[in-house]
Structure formats: structure tokens, C-alpha cells
Length: 531
Image (tube, rainbow, N blue to C red):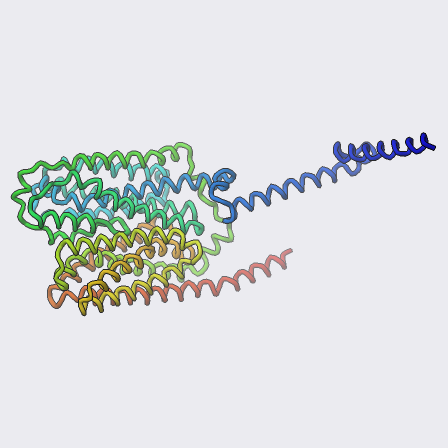
């Protein structure tokens, strides 16, 4: 009995081991007919698991570190983004350096205040030309886009190195045209390149790009300050501080042209000094060269071509649908950008003049409040990097438009009744309200109207330049002819115009979206009938 029992147990164990061995090693000889299906089952299961893992990596739920480790495409995009951000720190750095060194440049070129103001005008003209030319080259791909970015950044550095040695006034004017052209090219190529890299997914990175510009504009005057001329006259010192705080705007265009009147015309003590600005300008050249190197590397490995998304036929048809309506929407946003930049630059450029003439503050106080404005502007751009993750561009523009309108209304009322703390508070709020509008308009245009190409980006920058050039003369004439309060009246009225343009753009975008479902249903019905 015991022997039989042990034999039965041994037989059961052997059968169990055989079954496990069969599951481990695959189908037996008697199961050859099922071999193919078993292998297919295993392959399908592995494939599904891998696809699920890839989906998890690409979703926002994955951490940035996991995406960088496991997603090769994301890693390449991230590398490109960091290079663009570094280049915009350089752009802000160069533009921010111009204001504090303006007295030195006048000394070097033996220029009067009126003659020196031409540096600003010619820089803006060059900016326009550079934007248009780069936009054309970017879209036509006459040159590799990374090579174009390298030329713009490195060329910027070369021109900056030459500026301190231009002793002739005419040469100094010409060199500022060329400098503006490289700056406009860098600005256009950077904006368009970022949109090409990320498409509709790049809201946060696009805001980071413009925050980097603000960072460069803040750091540059600090690095330049030890080398600018030391003037004994207190007015000179105060007004040089005014240049430090009013040196940049969101598009890289200098707005100090209308603050130069704050400089003292007494330059006797300055003319006997030797300028040392070739030192910070040489440092800036080094920064330009360093930030240009990644682009020549990317050009050699053709990284940009690998990153550019090929549009499907359906996406291309979607872009072509309602073409006229999309173009009208784009034109609306171009006008919006022009008016917005006019408000932004005029507020920052005339703030010191307004508080000294209307509220009788000192130049130092005017410089401090302008510095507070730019600080809040930079903080707002930093916050915008995170806010765009939760809010659509349309909602962002509407919210910040409301905040800007209320801020300028509060600024108008507190200025009218000379409420000092109110002027400070609403100036800071105005900086926060203006901070993210410019980059968000780019993203809204990309999502709702037209793909942001080099030409589109250049047209936006041209519109910004036009707004910059037209509005300040109007403000100055109104302030001198009537009362300085027209500074507040005009900017508040122009902000109301921004609201009208926003709602017209919103109407057009909804008009386009309302016709899309019908087209999609029609295409679906046709495909079903064909099948």
C-alpha cells in the first residue's frame, strides 16, 4: 500500500514538473500547431506593455527626469530649448547693456545728445530689417535654421566687440544699424524656432524663453556698472540709474530714446575721462560666442530636421480650411501686438518723466519706481511659465487684459489725487499684467489662426517696432501741449482698444472652430461610405 501510494505521489509530481517545464520552455512537439499562436500571444503582450510604457512617458504625469532618460525625442527637444533660452539671455543682455553705456558711446563718438539719439532710431531700423530678412531665410531654408541662429548670435557678438572702438560718429550710426539687424534676426529666429520645435505643446517653454530675455536685461546693467563713466555730478548719477532701469522691453527693442532728455547736458567732467566700456562689451562678446556654439553643433548633426514634425494630410487640410478667416484673425493679432507694445514701452519709457513732472518726485524716486515695474515684469514672466499649464492662451490674454485695464485705471486715479502708495502699487501691478501677453499672443496665433513661421514671427516684431516708434511721440506731444496726465489717459484708452481687438480675435477663432466639426463629420461619412 505504502509503495503504491508513493508511486502515485511520484507520478503526480512528475506530471506537475512536466507541465511547468512545458509552460517555461514553450509548446511540446504535440503542440506544434499552437506554437505560432503562443508566440504571437507573447509578442502581443510585450508590445502592448511597451506601448503602454511609451504612452506613460509621453504623458504629463511622467517626471521631467524620466522623460529625459526614456524619451529620445523629448530629450532632443529639451536640448534645443535650452540653447534657445540661453540665446535669449544673451539677447536681453546685449539690449540691457545699451542704456547704461549710452553716455560713454556719446563720448566715444563725440556726439551731442541730439546726435546720440540717432543711435536708438537706427538700431530700431536695423531691427526691422533684420527681422524681415531672417523671417524670409528661416522659411525658405536657404540656410540651415541652426546655422542661421549661429550666425545671428555670433554676429551679434562680433558687432558688440566693434562698437567701443567706433570713434567716428557716422561709423557709430552704421554699426548700430548692423547691431539692430543681428538683434532682430536673433529675436525672429528664436521665436519661430521655439514654435517649430514644440508646436502647440510649447506654451511653458515659450514663456521661459521670454523670461530668459528679462533675466539678461536685469543682469547686464549690473555687470556693466563698474566700467561706465564715473560722473561727479549727482544728476548724472541719477540719470545713469534711470537708464539702467529703462533699458529693455519684451521684444528686445530699446526704449531709452524718450528718456535721454533726462540726461544733464553738462558733460565737461565726462569729456576728460577715458571710457572703459570695451571691457563689458568684450565680456558680452564672449557670452554671445558661448551661447552660439550649441547651434553650430546642432547644425552639424542635423538636429533641427529630426525634430520638425511632418504634418499629416488632415492637419494640412485643416490649416488650409477657412484660409481667409484665419488671415483676418492673424491681422487682428498683428494690430493687437502693435497696440500692446505701444502701451508697454510708453509706460516704462515715460514713467520717470510722468512722476517727476506731474507728481513732482525726484529723479531717484522715478528710477526706483521704474525698477520696481521691471522687477514685477520679470516675476510675472516667471510665473507665466507655470500658469500656461492650467490656462489656455485665450483665457490668459483675457485675464491679463482685465488686470492691465484695472491697473492703469487705478494708476490714473491715484495719480490724479496724488496718492503715492497707490501709484507704487498700481505701477507694480501693471508690470505683472503686461508680463505674459506678448509670448501668449504667439501661442494663440499658432493654435487658432496660422502656423507661426519665420515670416509670421518677423511680422509680429515689425508690428511691435511700429507701435514702439509711433506711440512715444504722441505721448510726448500730448504731455507737453496739455497736461502730463495725458500719459495716463492715452494708455488707459489704448488698453481699452486691446479689449476690442481681443474680443474680435476671440469671435474669429470661434467662427473657425464652429465650422470644423461639420467638416469632420462630412469627412467621416465619406470614409464610411467608401469602406
